[in-house]
Length: 489
Ligand SMILES: Nc1ncnc2c1ncn2[C@@H]1O[C@H](COP(=O)(O)OP(=O)(O)O)[C@@H](O)[C@H]1O
Ligand SMILES: [Mg+2]
Image 1 (spheres, rainbow, N blue to C red):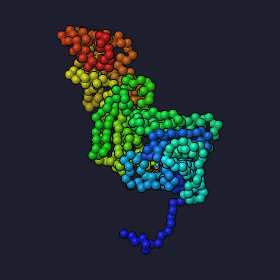
Image 2 (cartoon, rainbow, N blue to C red):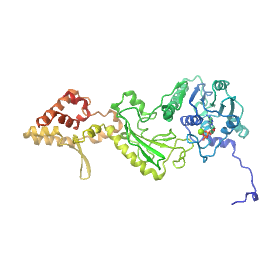
Image 3 (tube, protein in one colour):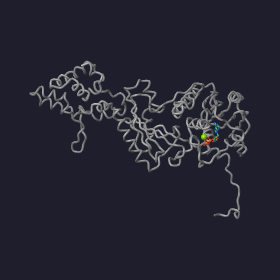
């Protein structure tokens, strides 16, 4: 142990100006900063949270108001203090905070003036402001008794309790912009629209669970559910507890595009697009930290885009999972990686099937029947190639029917096999997967039905029942993709 009483000391307090810049550089985006402020409202038991803003060029402001328990003067001053709570302190299980920094770092990342006005039940509102220019000028960490607009006080007086966070001088977003400049206004509105999507996503379980109502410019926000849980076509895989049951995994495979309306499909895509939103969704106390990430285990690829896996963490595993200050990064502990990867592989395999729309569901339904694909993957001298399945009933039918020409038909099939334009298909598929047609997609259903009928008759001719014939057809490519046509035979 060092005996401090014997040693000379000197003050070396952090220099205000450089400290501020450090705070500002933590790397919040506008979206993650607003979300962090809302976390505080949720921890303060708010039922309603209002995000409001006004465009005034460089004087624009953003305010986040809640109807939570509020703070008294001493609590507010403490809340304004950077590092107001020790990160190692055990938190209430529903608390979304941790470092005692969010309010300050999230705000300073966006603005130079942070005002907070708060009211506890049966008390008058209290307010304080951090003005970074004043801190810089004086070199002292002193709050100022300043409220940018009296209307914020009026609003709080109209409710029992609550808190409003006001950002002014939002230099990173609107610094130097002119109120009359329409291009700037549109850019500002577009950014706020992104904030809106981010909040609908980050707090979707709070909104859907009726725990909070989120208001954006006075309009109630609807939740964005990444798993489309209410869609019947969404595959919900069995959940799996890990880390001694403290963490829960649950995989979802979203419906194929053809099973959703165009609008639903676009909505489900998410703010950053289908491809970006595949992977793990990590929640801490149901608050989303990470919206689609394979955590370095796999690359994001088009054909896995329907795989989304929910990971539920409590708020006391932050260290294990390396949750950062911004609550936008999480890394699973090493010992869990293999388990997560194995679970993800199962979900991914199922997602590929749905993406390729192979009618696996039907296949399972008629598991007693063997599935009859048109193409087979084979390996020849260590190389992959694709062969036409000569066991396919249609091919069989053709070959048996015209015995004399069998040799030339076989040669034709061989020619087709050898010339499948694989490189072209691969490129097109990865560039524009949604434009890839299904077999017989643009062909009239009459043509398909007559082909089905041909098959059907020949199966009946072999002495099978109608039921058997239909089931066999449903297990045969490409008819498996069009089960609704079977009844028209
Ligand atoms: N909207 C709010 N309502 C009531 N108290 C709040 C609110 N925002 C912040 N606080 C108080 O300020 C403290 C510091 O907040 P913050 O800097 O975000 O750190 P953390 O959330 O990690 O505790 C919180 O722990 C809480 O006591
Ligand atoms: Mg916080």
